[in-house]
Length: 327
Ligand code: ADP
Ligand code: CIR
Image 1: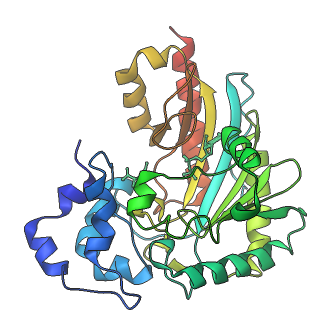
Image 2 (image 1 turned 180 degrees about the vertical axis):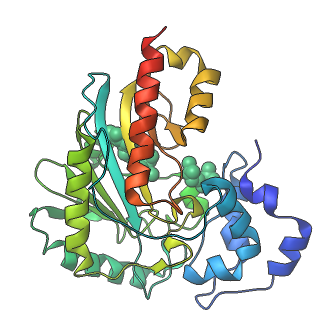
């Protein structure tokens, strides 16, 4: 399957964009490098700064439309009130995780920051995290032992090293400098620093109490917003490196056992398309399912509110559980 970048980058569009450069020095060649070097990309393009989405809109706009669907405008509404069926009591649900991506205003995105800017971003985020009432700790990647790092990755808490999509997007430059993870003692609230986005704010726990996970996430995002200013636009919502994360930048997922649908992938995929769900493997994006366990999350994030993202996931997962039980 060709990437959305290849689908929409006609000779005419490339000709129009090839000599343009944003104020931070980002070009269309930098934006499409990941998709060109990784022909199995599904999207294949990254922004370098907020301005990229405007300057290169003749390629970004159709990709955004196709991924998120038609939408009028984006409006953030970060609250849990109104969520229906927020506790899925079914022992096939292994765990729940909700994350949002955020980036700071006044800096290029991770694809195009300098080493010193990345360290500045890390310091600002560390200072803000110090104020959180969950009393977690920040661990820089540089200071972490190889064993601790491997365990955090295996247990689904930390990002991996060497992702080839991020590599070719310039997101792994100067690794591991400036990267790290913050978490509370029981690892139910975590923040990744300077991975694909400058912040990935994460709430997670075992089981299917989605409302509890969502409530914790909202609480600490609100606390962080007192200390950090996140890049946001009325048209695109929260600004992220990858156009799939624009809008709420929210991915609400469960790890769920669906052994029967696993043997009937065309039906599984049909249901997921209908209910705006994405299927990932057990170790995140581009990984495989193990023992019939899948990562099921909302797909659209732009032009929908945060609660709609979570509701998409809840509604869809209930259907999948029902269908899987009927074999
Ligand atoms: P992101 O969610 O930030 O887009 P990934 O898809 O790579 O990135 O997932 C990051 C990590 O989070 C992976 O280790 C993945 O297994 C873990 N993860 C995602 N959803 C869940 C979940 N519901 N329960 C436990 N771990 C999860
Ligand atoms: C790709 O194009 O496949 C990667 N750059 C990741 C794209 C974002 N992920 C997604 O929508 N699943």
